[in-house]
Image (cartoon, rainbow over all chains, first blue to last red; front, side):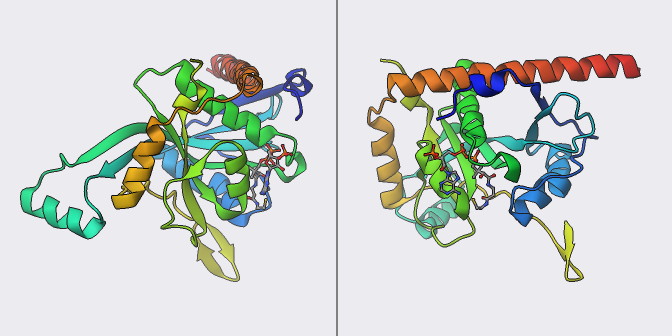
Length: 188
Length: 72
Ligand SMILES: CC(C)(COP(=O)(O)OP(=O)(O)OC[C@H]1O[C@@H](n2cnc3c(N)ncnc32)[C@H](O)[C@@H]1OP(=O)(O)O)[C@@H](O)C(=O)NCCC(=O)NCCS
């Protein structure tokens, strides 16, 4: 694996995109993911649904040559005592009671992609490592899991990085929900 | 949104995390209680990558503030 020091000496920076910021061009090899960063991410940002971070050269002020991006939001994993959704819905309609649901706080990677020119150089894994530690090192509000809505082509990449599928309901869908347990990083 | 063959196409929305029921819920809770630990080597790599990217983020935010200050 490439050592972080290989890119430590470069002038790469990470910035959080603000509401007026846009990305001018990006190609990760997937049209849908490109469209997300070029056109959709500002909408998520404006509505405060997700924040996008870009990795780029320090002199790329207009975001014309970004290397990678990732979008983060608050999330939770909820588990129910019920066997299925129908039983749960019937119960909660009748009693208007959500107590039979237990939730664990999580942070969600909505989208993450690496430019075609930087693929396979461990940039994606480096960003995942950062995200995992970011939420444990600075666990301000409690966060147990990292979830990700992963494009099916990228699933092997997430499995290699310790993520597992939440269930098999979305096995044939274009994206799947996977998660990483931050307790896996504990030292004891 | 992009135009493809004269049609407007929206990027796929970020999917909601589903509620887990039945066997899925049981498997999830069981796995949560298992003790899995990453290797020392992996931990060292994660920590190094965290420090590296955190440095990039701090540099990025400082540059942004600098530019903002000179623009005002
Ligand atoms: C998926 C993605 C985020 C991975 O980022 P990356 O920086 O290229 O990945 P890394 O270099 O950190 O890869 C880490 C490991 O995962 C593996 N991997 C990466 N992408 C993979 C993929 N799509 N399928 C299988 N394995 C993959 C790598 O081989 C590597 O293993 P290694 O350490 O044994 O060499 C990136 O390729 C991307 O943005 N893809 C978006 C476009 C897309 O999904 N296209 C579909 C075809 S890949």
